[in-house]
Amino acid sequence: MAFDDLTAVKDDMIAFIAGHGLRRMNSFVPEDIPTVLFEEDDVDGWKDFVEHAKAANAPFLTMSDVLLEPEDVSTLIAQARDQRFATDAPELASEAQALMQHVGKIGYLQLGFAHGGVIFLYETATEWYDQFQELMDSVADFGHLLVDDSDED
Image (cartoon, rainbow, N blue to C red; front, side, top):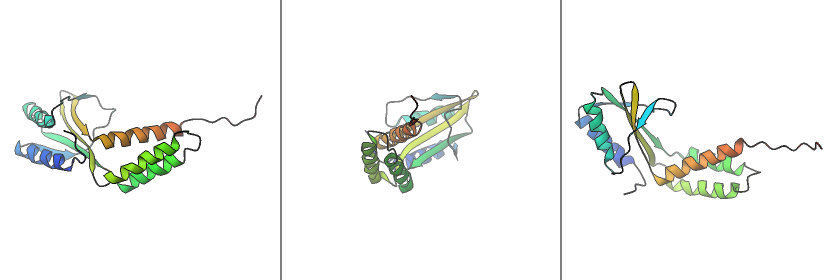
């Protein structure tokens, strides 16, 4: 079951974590930290993750979410339009514009806990958030292209 907005899931997570007597700290675990990613295909797999944290005697779980802001989409659209040399820049701008319908929605959630010197993570995202990230990466890749307009022979 795919979600378009993870706000209700976040609310359920907060209640479930508290119901298990665990504390929650709002923080994001970046990619450069050694992590083990919890893989679960079930829509409620995060509940198993919380139960694993409790079984590991984790003193708290980290929690992070991403709410799509109008500025995020506007910046993405502007960056896509600025890609003068990219042949698919108009397509990128159009795809970015379509994301405006998701402004105000939570598209990404991350839970984490530390155990044995490693951070265990549970992550989930909506399809539109994954698309948003792909567009951000595409625009960033275009920004790294070098154009040589010298007339050296």
